[in-house]
Length: 69
Image 1: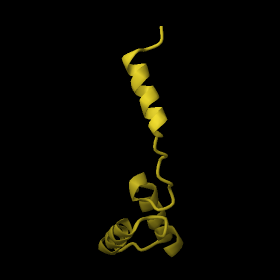
Image 2 (image 1 turned 60 degrees about the vertical axis):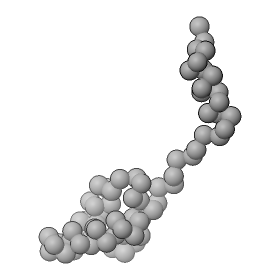
Image 3 (image 1 turned 45 degrees about the vertical axis):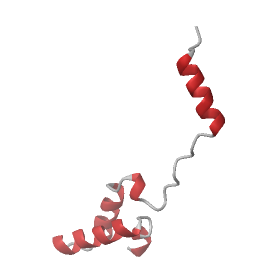
Image 4 (image 1 turned 180 degrees about the vertical axis):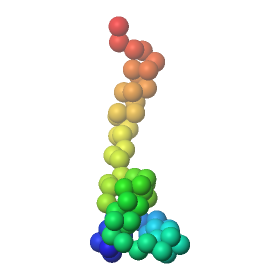
């Protein structure tokens, strides 16, 4: 069960345990369901999206201003 909880960030881990204690169902299936319902920004196992480089941002702006015909 702790391996699954480690895939969540700390605040979400606390929230998940509080939900399980409140519902009196502390099971692996419940933790797995909570992990699947966890948004990506609250998960520790999902890498953050790559940021565009400065060049990509400039290219996108140029294409927005002068689209190809």
